[in-house]
Image (cartoon, rainbow, N blue to C red; front, side):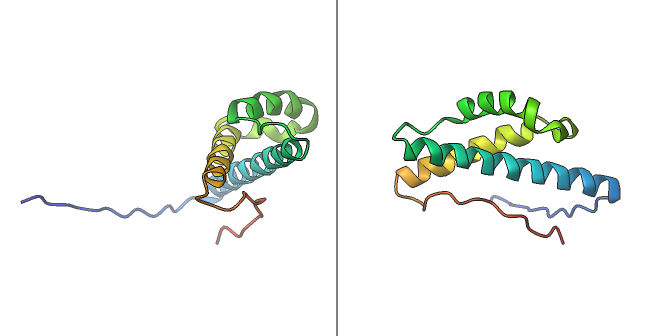
Length: 109
């Protein structure tokens, strides 16, 4: 007989941690939307959609001049956002999902 057990955890961050989480969430959303705009641009011009790696390389060049606030968050936030965008595009191309949409800010409560 196989026994299965599940655990449920709840985060209870203090104010400093809440701010850090909000910054990372916002940064990831910003990067995703930035990447989606580049993707739509490429598709409208008849080019292949950029991969997550290509978006990340372009992002690293762009952020130095246009996003000085970026030093406050981890480099992993945009990387994962671009990977998520790439997965969303793959799902759309394979008919499993609709075309990706821009992310909007939601309440953390």
